[in-house]
Image (cartoon, rainbow, N blue to C red; front, top):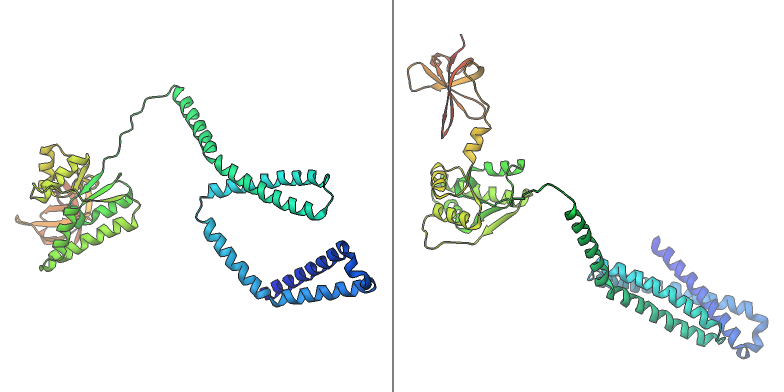
Length: 366
């Protein structure tokens, strides 16, 4: 339906063009049409019909050519920055306005229509092109003025009295194999508690791949889980991840390479390996231990407090029962053996903090 409407419009434009051509020829070449003045209206209508039908017939070809031209034009325009296009458009408009003023002045001195038309076309083309060129040439000057304005604003702000602040660059976080396999690092990154760039050494990736290709089923599952965690962090989380190709061939152990890399780039090691944590502290490398974070966010139990817990198994000592909180904290219930499989109220008697976590000791309330 739309294509037919466009063809009709093209036909009407053709009819208008034919009428215009006929009127122009009659006006400026009257000697050719001396004997047809009595039929000029009929001839005008005939010419309009001929041009209209001709343009209607070739309408699909015109539409196809216009579409191809638009595609080519769009492809060419997309090669240039938006700022250049905007400046070029402004320059073209200014050039055409100036050309209009010039052509108006020329028309008062030259009364020959053909020459005036030719000069007008040349002036419009020249001034339009000149306006575009001048606008694009002035681009750097305009941007320099903008930069100068920003610099002046910045200097004025520096002159104003303000409190001195020390902006400390966020150090990158180097992940070790254990924390990647553990998987909790992804959840911690989602919460936003890990800031800065995550650095994953190439030798850690190689170790993960070696574990994922292991013949042992458990190791293979852990290795593949670690690789899935890395893919999740890289694709789903809004955090910068860098694969470091740095390697220290004179250091055979992966943990030692990890500490050396963190020391070299001024980063922190993220791990849940207790032994690596101790070695890093000895070498002066900062460490973020996931287990320490987990223990820090566990709820604090106070002696004399009551809590509900389900006794799931017997303890090492006589009549002891073992229960667990939702976060995995173990509760040793003195005299809780007979309540195995039941949920009881436990009275907290003491709390023991160990490097591996927190242990709560208690007894049944009754």
